[in-house]
Image (cartoon, rainbow, N blue to C red; front, side):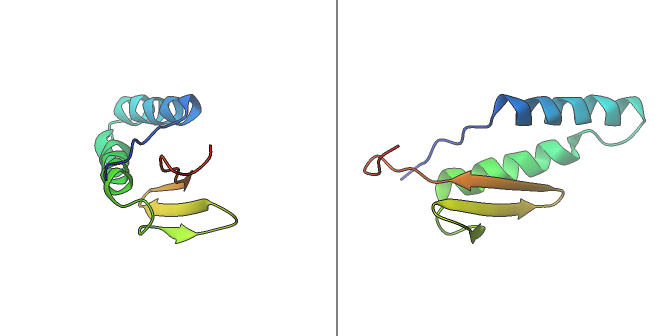
Amino acid sequence: MTFQVVWTDAADEVLHTHDHLTWERGGDPTVLDRAADRINDLLARTPESVGESRFDNERVLIVEPLTVTYEVFSDTSPC
């Protein structure tokens, strides 16, 4: 089964702002992009078995330098 990964608008804005500021300062703006791509890959394939469980349906996944909090909803679970 493949899952759809949905990032909030706020998270997208933070990533884009960080990329731009890092580029302006001469750093590597792709660091967060690579971490986000890895998160997308892991969560799209096996969201229930990566990261750590938290309260209720919440999970946490760390892919340095990012930490994401997420929930997994399948077609059979109520949203």
